[in-house]
Image (tube, rainbow, N blue to C red; front, side, top):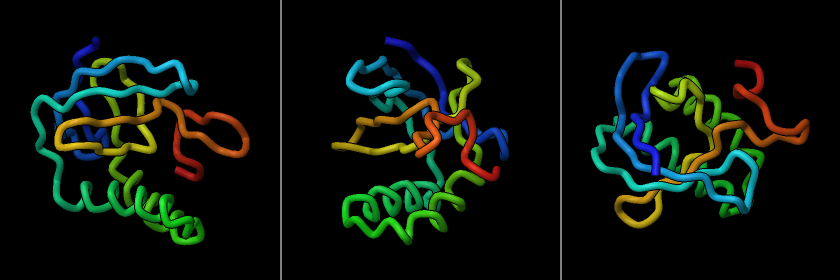
Length: 113
């Protein structure tokens, strides 16, 4: 397990301390546990809204919410990588990708950012 902080590179703020590991079922996919959380309410809202849109298959609504979420430039502090498709499960579990999954393959940044 790796320990690292989830940060906003834009705001220079630490959002959470997590412990995570690579999961082999997808490329660039990780799951972990949130040890300490200081996520702003707005960021939590955008993350949950993105997941809700995907689950409801209302993909046309996703671009606007993703754009707002990814404007925070969220990533891993020590790893120096951005994270995408963040999902909270249970009370303290988190999953994410370290590359943005797109129709053009995996990208290092959110498209057009």
